[in-house]
Length: 423
Image (cartoon, rainbow, N blue to C red; front, side):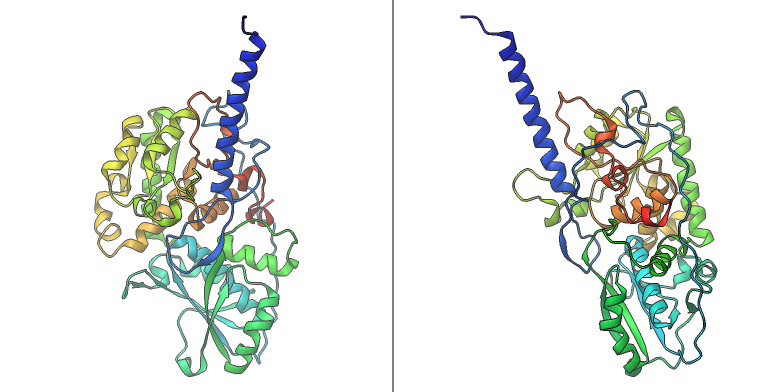
């Protein structure tokens, strides 16, 4: 008895459906938020959770190729709220920046929101690394004058800690990221009124930068948007290093119209338990070999320049370099005269900052590791119109590929909090 051709077609379609379903399940796990406390750099968690039922407008269509021109940047929606100085308000809010620039953005925002609510004076923070004694001035990395001027009329800012502040009159409080007015009123304001000053340290109940379902009160939202997207700029020397690296990568990518890909992959993170999945085939991180195959299947040309956030070259990166010969880490493209200062043994904070800003300014960003780095780079890119953020996946060899299927849901769904700040 012969086989009905319709049965063969049905069988092929069934197998294809299961392959696609399996891939979708894996990506949803990679993109689903995990609520947990994060008190150190390098924590991983899944990406944002929404079903990928629609394709990104930025890359939809098979004829566009991976370098389709992006739309222009958005404009800030926030307005700078006024501030009436209160002569009776003499208290201070202090804090430190820790764990790298992806954390700095959120820590700055929370401190500004708290100081604004309390009508307190904000003390410019220091910067503390992960190792004991790893300490820097704010001005070593960021532009002090820009920071102060951006917050003028919003909160009062002083550049150094006043001599009258001491442990006796300074209460230390841990506050949740994206702190709310209700939390400040219930947990911070009473202590501030009692002590006169507070020192805040942000912790992260969940690494989640999605827009809230209910919009915050307008003035507070404006303060948060200004602090997160309008107050931090690199100081000139660090800015010059980042610009020179971006320009070099664009030059190396001249055969792909001067555009390059930045991939956040750090090998020490791949050994983290948070990257191992749950034994069900789901993934939160992707290794160099998987990233190489992902980019090749999406149609990136072999002449595309690839920037890796891995600190130094490792043999495992050869998997990418074999397919994309123009693959580099910082040491390969940083100007020689800058390496001693920015790649030295005590330069870890500089390296993190350089990675953050190169990934924010690349033409395409691929977050091989989930977490706050991905979330805050995405926010910065959204504000400048650089929405080419591709979330990796293991693509079946026989699957048809559309770039739009792998665009970050922060972009395709416009659910990143940055969309509350830009329009």
